[in-house]
Image (cartoon, rainbow, N blue to C red; front, side):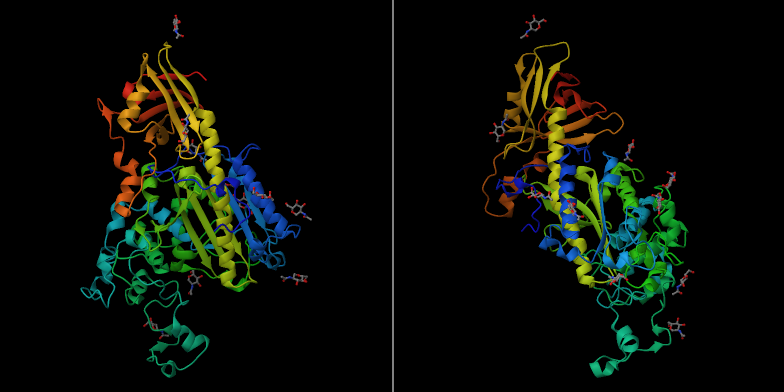
Length: 587
Ligand SMILES: *[C@@H]1O[C@H](CO)[C@@H](O)[C@H](O)[C@H]1NC(C)=O
Ligand SMILES: *[C@@H]1O[C@H](CO)[C@@H](O)[C@H](O)[C@H]1NC(C)=O
Ligand SMILES: *[C@@H]1O[C@H](CO)[C@@H](O)[C@H](O)[C@H]1NC(C)=O
Ligand SMILES: *[C@@H]1O[C@H](CO)[C@@H](O)[C@H](O)[C@H]1NC(C)=O
Ligand SMILES: *[C@@H]1O[C@H](CO)[C@@H](O)[C@H](O)[C@H]1NC(C)=O
Ligand SMILES: *[C@@H]1O[C@H](CO)[C@@H](O)[C@H](O)[C@H]1NC(C)=O
Ligand SMILES: *[C@@H]1O[C@H](CO)[C@@H](O)[C@H](O)[C@H]1NC(C)=O
Ligand SMILES: *[C@@H]1O[C@H](CO)[C@@H](O)[C@H](O)[C@H]1NC(C)=O
Ligand SMILES: *[C@@H]1O[C@H](CO)[C@@H](O)[C@H](O)[C@H]1NC(C)=O
Ligand SMILES: *[C@@H]1O[C@H](CO)[C@@H](O)[C@H](O)[C@H]1NC(C)=O
């Protein structure tokens, strides 16, 4: 069900799913998100004027009423359209922040929010940049030999640290419980002994040994050592690598691992070294501001809680950042600015399913699988939610479009559930509206940049024609509509060999230096009937199985290369099978 009256009209068409496509984009990523003719720009205007009309009271929209008491900042970003990060932003200041004694009274792209657990993905990014690949697979007992004496070979009662690795922590599949001291949120003893004292034995609980500082575990506060913290985590939830479970503890421990292996004891040191420094994210830090009036910060809820230093917990949720800095962060990931492109591609892959078919987990990532309502194609969104105290946030990166966005919200005058719901609503509003816009913008640019006739250099008996076919069922991409080589109809050979009359090109490889691109043919086949998952796989998912199955002299029949000018227009095409022969764009 679609909660907004905002979606593009086409979403209501009832079309068959496009079958047999590779995972990945249908077309090259769009480059124009901000000009007056960009579909993304016009949909963004639609979102922002709908928000504005609602918030200024001229056009109330029931679906948005949860935003009335929220302060929020939204920002889109793109690798290819540098204006997007600055111009596709929307900010709204709620009533409590407008009145706040400390911090800003109007939010903008430089306003500093608590991003809470969005931090976790920055911790992983830092780790990927600072640790050796092999470090991710070391048992924790090797990194912290002091914990090797903890009870082993008793997986029911004790966490088996020798089976837990930094990779399992980052991927939320270590099996350790969500929180442990110094996170007291879920600790009932804190309530029964201190906050709201009651004798726990009258509730049927055994008494605990306490001392004046609290619960008697080795880690007493946020400045405890890694080993104290590890020793304070009690029963396992699951075995390692069994099933994912959200845990702040995973990222506190991962932070201590990074500190230990880099020799940089404070989290802020390695955050700065790996990410914030190189990206010039000058308004981002894992340290809380120490002095009122907290200039530049968005202060909601209690101003006194605000200055709390996270210590070892800051690798789990301690970061403060801005819409502008998060755009730099996201663009650096998508553009492989800090981490090499191959490692980035590996990072942006799932490591585990969850019990939900459209939600998976990667290293730090919460991955949403968006199904396009028109094409039926899957677009994976790599995201991280933050949600704590009066703040919530999202970073979302979409590698298929070299695009992403951030959402940051806060409010001291609504419940935590209402504040969370506002962040989810805004992320849904953007993704449900902008992903279809990106799809259509990418299609329009691909049609303009690639459609036409290409002629064999110095020949008029060799031609290649590409037609952008937007008809339902056509594969939503460039179709090879003629290929004649030295007067011979090579298209019909390809159609016969590849098993379809309709050969659609999907983007595959790309060289950022030369701008040359590879495409691979998807032979479009009508969806076949199936009786269950096994027959469905073969009826609907043949691309990954075929994978350029047919070759001629070792060159894949389905692969085409393009020379692309700086303005994005293809200037020459070259079927791999013709071994270097180029067809120059003539229309
Ligand atoms: C946004 O788009 C929808 C669907 O096209 C349209 O009904 C609505 O009027 C638009 N709203 C604004 C504020 O432009
Ligand atoms: C309210 O927002 C709408 C949509 O952006 C705008 O057209 C209108 O001028 C605004 N009205 C006031 C009073 O601010
Ligand atoms: C992306 O990386 C390329 C180099 O591969 C660089 O030329 C370009 O400026 C980068 N884009 C952004 C937005 O940083
Ligand atoms: C903001 O301040 C005004 C004037 O002092 C007051 O009337 C209003 O109730 C305050 N609003 C909030 C949300 O605190
Ligand atoms: C409380 O117990 C912890 C853990 O055993 C210990 O480190 C700490 O020193 C104790 N504090 C006091 C005041 O006894
Ligand atoms: C932890 O250390 C920081 C920095 O030295 C200090 O500001 C903070 O008060 C300490 N926190 C606790 C709970 O002792
Ligand atoms: C970092 O950002 C600041 C503030 O925008 C700017 O003045 C400075 O030139 C930037 N430094 C680099 C190295 O880009
Ligand atoms: C940080 O925010 C200030 C305004 O508070 C701004 O002048 C500066 O350019 C920002 N720095 C960066 C790197 O964006
Ligand atoms: C191809 O080019 C040759 C030489 O320019 C010309 O004689 C011939 O008519 C052309 N054929 C076609 C089909 O245009
Ligand atoms: C476009 O796709 C439709 C649906 O598959 C097909 O019937 C039509 O022939 C295609 N047109 C071209 C020019 O390939």
